[in-house]
Length: 285
Image (cartoon, rainbow, N blue to C red; front, side):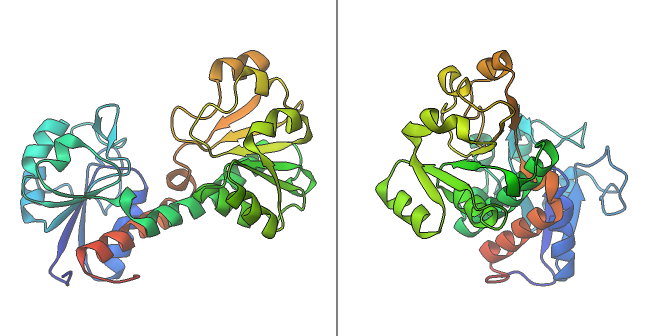
């Protein structure tokens, strides 16, 4: 169980880790930040070695994602050890991180935070809200005056549909399953089959794509309305043919890691709540 003597080490990551730190401190839980030597912040622990900090911690929170370009995701650090060396330092420790890394997980007691349904849904909420902010900053007309399409009715698609209904009455969602189409219709939005996007493409001013597949190939992209904005929310490598996007001069935004960029404190707080619950400190914190 988590108590006031429990020590969490927050290792690497981006601004979300400061949200994790602040939430843990607000619950009177000891938290130490390491891996931010390129930032000037009094919350960062710089007086101890990483080896000592790991040894003195009860659990370690790694970034989301854990790994980027083969190394620990730590954009604000220049001196963290390799994943192989870090995995040796974490032997036997309880470790939490966003995503899987075989090097890390085989050496410690590892929990992948992206397997937690509550956190995945919360991230979908934050992603949808940030995606709308991205659209507002990029489109040349108001969303209320736009004909909007959401491609996909998964977690992010559902959250987008919920939020966008407050912005526009001209909202369409594409799906493939009859069950999803019924749900979309009952929510008050329109629906089309994903296979029918091409023949309807010139209707839309704004498109949010959430499907992790190459839906937007050359043939579909060339049917888009002039000045249509396509915001790609799918995981890498995205849902659009980038070569075709450039060739056709499509207004396109590959919106990666939106919760961390737009709402790092809220995103970090969600991570902290999840870790505390899984560790045994708080239920529905």
